[in-house]
Length: 120
Image (tube, rainbow, N blue to C red):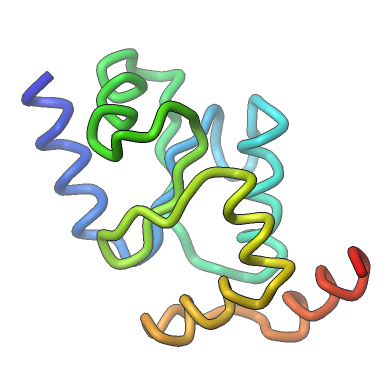
């Protein structure tokens, strides 16, 4: 498990935005991963995706790393942000915009506003 932890730590710290998910950003393989990847893609966020289905050690390792039991998991600037429900809430409240702005992450503000308008 140490190798998985080291890989996860390096990935999280060397990429501004990382999504550990089931599948990939272009081909999610679960509804929750699809929702978070869809939000990030729609908002034009450049993020690194890690398919946990490709490696059982990473799949379990990311849960241990964050002490969070579910996937997907979003990291921004090395910090764990949350899973699908938290990212959905943060998107709708505007907190995700604030997090991206505070960390210098480029995103499409108009797209973020459209998500909120569609869910109002």
